[in-house]
Length: 251
Image (cartoon, rainbow, N blue to C red):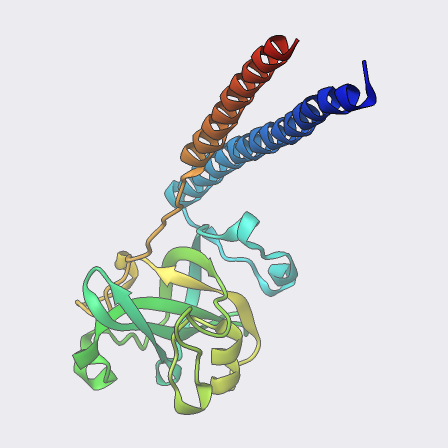
């Protein structure tokens, strides 16, 4: 066999090796992505189960000041809690909200607890035309009160489309730290509480509107990656068979 014949025979084998390696690497990557999505699926299902358990559990005392450094979404988000104190009605903050009831505001009112600390309470929703506290006097609570609701985590800086503007008193997220600073409140818990409907006298604000939504598309993503891996494997097998036939014909 001449050098030219050796070189001609080597090229198809070299091409076959390169395509095979790339194809196998692609399949391995797709399988890894699919497996990662399966792990994410079980993580999400566990998260949903834990949150549902928290929401349905009897209310427990909200974390005191000594426990504030340990507050985290994984441990406390949507925990059903109870608070006792007095609302600082004159320090309420209105946060823009879009709800099933339409556009309006969340009424964030500081609740002064008996130990001297303060927790921001989202008392609920009011429509645009009822933003003035004088237009909803029936829902104003002056006496000591028990509030039950769900713990929520701080929402710093603003929404995706709008940044909070403390100097203009325009709020697009429930930014606990910034609201506390703007109102001169201290010490304030690093979380807030979405009050349930039972904590609200009268018709406004409308409490109990917390939306607990966890998008769970991990199974679809996993099947997509696995299908792509199977398709790639099929194409690689077809390529191998075609290459074998070509080599047999050349021989």
